[in-house]
Image: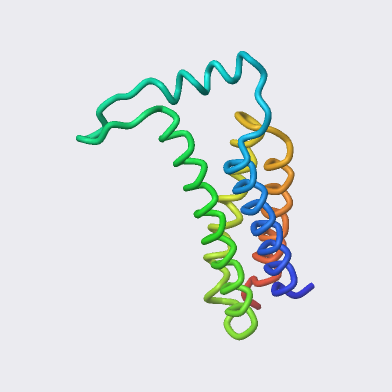
Length: 140
């Protein structure tokens, strides 16, 4: 198997993860009374963060958007690596390895602290990247 289709698949999975994460962050969802009380408390408590008044909600929401931004950048890098792998797979291989390891770690974090959808997406991305890394190995 060639590395480019695997890298394009990883790109698509990461772009899907980005879109779903962004939608989930922006949509917020329906909350029961207890969850709504927690969210209201997060929005109500203000504190000084390095000279700027913030709430726990600001950090929670901002980190959600950071996650989306990082996934988008990750997807763009995967597209670029797919292009690079066509002409210089040896140079692309170390980057693919690092991104594969990052997705393994992301999948582990999703298993430990989150829920199945991002776990499955991260695991599939890690598999695609691991397979791409393997087929990009130098000939000996």
